[in-house]
Structure formats: structure tokens, C-alpha cells
Length: 88
Image (tube, rainbow, N blue to C red; front, side, top):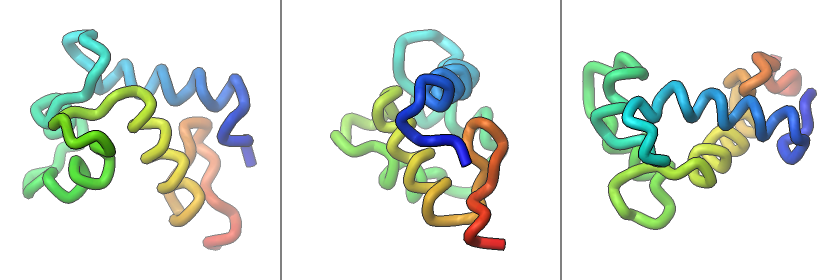
């Protein structure tokens, strides 16, 4: 499994982040999150978990923390596409 602090992992996180950050302002807004996740319901639970500083948007640092937590605690692929093998 790819280390969460490796340069490769950080680079893949940034690339994933940039796909969400449509306007390239350095943040993922609720609108951008909704647009790219395809979630039809409320995105508030996801935003609340990811938005550590509670400014209403997700920074790259917050995005990395969210991916790190998700890939370590569930069967969610890391940015490299590797799932947590302990959950199989």
C-alpha cells in the first residue's frame, strides 16, 4: 500500500484535488464538490467532516487529510487506486 506521506501519494492527491477545484482558486467549494461527486442528496456531512477550519470550503491540506482518513478506515481507494487490504 502506498505510504500516505510519500511524494507520489501527495502528488496524486493534488491531481485529484485539482479535478474538483474547477475555478483553480485553491479550494473545493460545496458547488464543485456536488458537481464532481454526483451526490444527489446533501453534501453537508462530507463537507462538515472535510472542512476542518469551518470556512465552508476544502483546502488541499484538508482534502489530503480526508483521503488519508478514508483510505485508512474503509475500503476506499487511495489516490493510487489501492484499497485498504485489511478491509477485504
